Image (cartoon, rainbow, N blue to C red; front, side, top):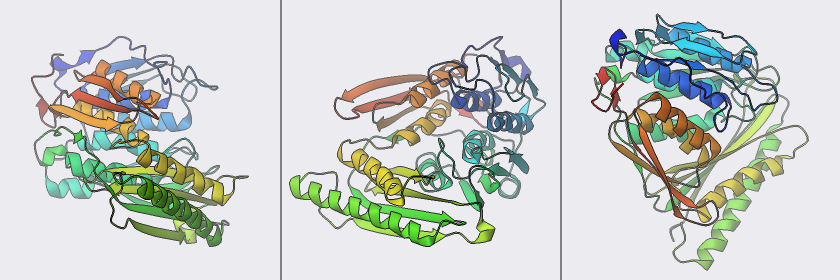
Length: 407
């Protein structure tokens, strides 16, 4: 386990980062994960200070309790719903599953997955057989929730990107969808520990998008939301994509699309009763490029919003990303790559649009809790711009810390 020798434990009496930049739950998620991995004790104050309801919400508390359970010998202080200050003293090593984490609400269990994934990656699983069978956790809550990535985003964008560029062996399986207001969704996350390979993470280089070759339109409906609603969403998205592709390729010979036919794949499923709790629908569009870049956009059905409007929002978002930018990742993926760039060994670089507040917050937290150093530079002005986010990683391996660590 990286950096868990007591003599290397870095004690931070107070990290006043709860209200840093974005000031939301992302600070808790990234800080707690990095604390458990690096052995840095943390106290986070002003938790969600900029929110209408400050302090821990049930899903944030569940995330902290989950990491506390994964970190053997750890101590978690001040953690309760509404708390605005918590202290986490990480234990001597991270263990893997089995484990069940339940938000008890419709809070996103996908955000729990984001917390758990790096911790499971650095867990003390000693061999391939043990890793495959035991390094699994079950997460309960909302699988498709507002203000959070849906399960298909992790399945189709995040995890494949981590697998391609970082060789991370992970899978996220849907058991049952859950929606607002009751949640009750269930997913299974499996991650093979780096201990299996006795290595760390390689650097990430996602700097050339190439040509967009394929676009996936995937829609689901569940419960009382009829399959025909999903079909309308698919039709709307397909029309927008087809029209925009035709317009751009006709106007610009050097457009981000090849002159070959763009393959459009469509799926539309109505979940059987055993695969969903409650009523809901959603859409994801994923563009895949010739260099393997994956760019996604999602939409979640909500009361009072037509199926067409939900699909239009997601389709327009992806088309804007493709045609008005040369970014290699979407904004949400950039947010989620920061923690892995910080942990990796060597220099990583990702080309993206102007960093969101979430991305800048993730960078700030990573630089506080690791020796990683980021360089965020604008490359091109314009709609969304084009930016380079690079990082000299801390080089944290599953069996120790490289010389980059001066703590």
